Image (cartoon, rainbow, N blue to C red):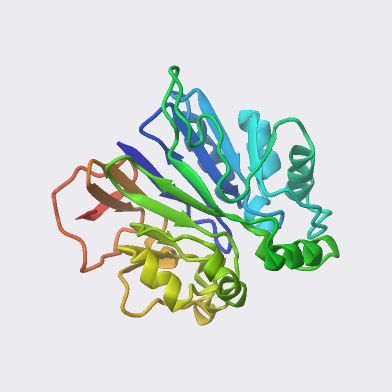
Length: 294
């Protein structure tokens, strides 16, 4: 069994994967003051049984790494995964400053399309892999070079984000693309291989500006699209797809066991019609809302 949990942190991202192997992965670290201690306590508790803990930071902007300094102070980051860059966005923010320090340290592993690393996606006699693969960036692609240059000149760092895919052996899969924007996604669609994926976290917090192109959605064929916490007037609700909207659901946890995914939220009122009621016991401090099969 593995658990994928996305925290409701406002217009930002913070997620973890408690793998079915000896791995624990944190993706981004937006930690608002009102929830910081609560989230850090949970992360510390949930990662205790895992020997390999990695933090993947999609890009150095405050809505994704604004709490990175607090996370580092709390758990002592040893494995820091990021795209190699010299972005100057939000350079005075303490979370971004910690990002830069980790990026430039021996703790950094620079991720790119097709990269391999023991225990991210390689097994050993000691332990199994985390099942994480990097689908993008291709550092030789002109679109990525342009995005790097923009970020290095002080512009947006949105389009230097990696595309991350997690796959549980014989079970569910999940997809993250940070804050990649729609026009950029259209420009790289022929350079990215997109397997069918169970859970798709909509880019750019679910904003219309980051909507996945139709061709991407056709290839991914998601069972659930998770829409983030951008302001409602900026959201794209992915018509004709099953969705969970974090603005309404609160924290969302996907309990992946075998070929089943059991969905839990913190909102007491949130419901969806597309999940089956398997009468699963709720995770601590959460409410079970239904299940699906992969």
